[in-house]
Image (tube, rainbow, N blue to C red):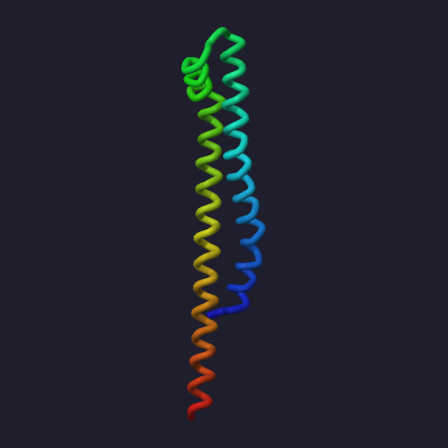
Length: 107
């Protein structure tokens, strides 16, 4: 097991994970703003209440935002899984090292 590679990979994945999470949060928050913008647009077109909300939710810009949010969430989860895997490999290495030291001390 190449511990240096694991540590380097953990270091490298940090910024990638952070960027993916930032995109996910951005699209989550932007979705709310976009809904408000589209509902205002609907009100200006003479719609009200449920019709305005339906207009906003079914609008091409809103559905595009949802697709981007789904993609951002997917990328974030993939990066999280990679990070978690690297952490488990590191912990395995640490445990192995501790066990080896224990055995050497007993012999």
